[in-house]
Image (tube, rainbow, N blue to C red; front, side):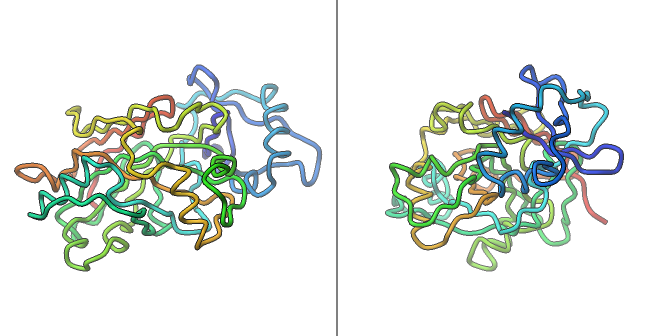
Length: 296
């Protein structure tokens, strides 16, 4: 399944993306009460039985073209901050160290930080950025992992059993804030700094999340081109490392790092400006497309 969150008729709804990606299907009404699934977070909390029920009754629901709805982030308001990995592609680690004038050293353990949950933004359309806060707005395409089952001290061998699905993220970063504050959180948490989506593709439709093409372009020019097999730490390693210390809950999102091609590491450095169009794609998962605008 590919699950989206849409706004139609002034209300947010859970919808399924048709196999050909041309339209959406609204879940058909179920039994009154607990089986009625109003949104994606509720679906995740209800667990596998609810996921099966949705798959069984969705084909009979009404269909809507994308042009008739507003596509939102699949999890518009996560309950918790997003987890994220730094320097999790070797080539990005190398470019980051080179830009800092240092010799690259491969991380011995996952570099984990959080990104404010209120940074989540829609996967398409205008993306407002407060340029009074930063003049160095950078891009980072990332594979996002959505947790479906509680994970507490899970082994790597079973870690993928706790994954509900995958989507695309753009971990937009204010590099000058990152330098100024000597850490990641503030520089990664500007409002609108995490376009997410365009929908969640369930794990059963992604045979190997470590074998996907991942790309980003700015105004049609390719900036990041890689594959997810270049991760330093795999998704099972990451889930095991985080859950050893922090319990993961259904609906938690983990951003798994970005490949080389970021703006700050270019020669000369380049950053986003109002009017720029950023497109982030991951094979089989869809594309984010956002035009950068300046907030008043």
